[in-house]
Length: 247
Image (cartoon, rainbow, N blue to C red):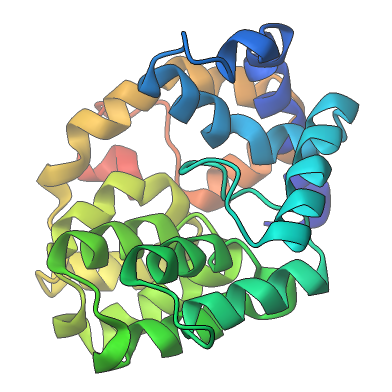
């Protein structure tokens, strides 16, 4: 995605999810449900990327505390600031250089995948594919799905699907993130044709994401509409069909 398209997309995301930040104290309180907390953390990167000062302050605070203590502020708060010192600490933890247990190494690995600007995903995949990583099947499945959300991570997922698909369990579930992989239409199309990915598995998830969101995105201007067209999002085809996903 071009930088100008990314900026418009982040603004769209931030406008939609701004109510999460209007109730920020509740979202981080013990009274909030896990679903509410997860949704809050999940939207956080878009708020940061869009320049929301409250979001940036929150993430920077987490990051400063993490640098001091090495303790994750919350099991879902892997959205740490793009700080080389944070990256180095996460990398050390993922490698278990200070005797970290498996759960801590898994958390560090999952945090590292959000670091495309520091070449984090390449290092993550390298560490992840190491037989000594200790990852169980469920962790591996979630790892590849979540990696789709990092820009460089998507390219690495596609590379693995093309060259070594057996390392990815439950490959068809990757299509639940088809809208993340969609900018790579030729590659995804080829994987569908070869039967490595199954288009039927994603229909429900894509429908949950909602066609209305795509219509709203188009209203941001021709530049974003161009991104949607290049990404393969069609408003004409039937929701959930292969044509709608990558047409």
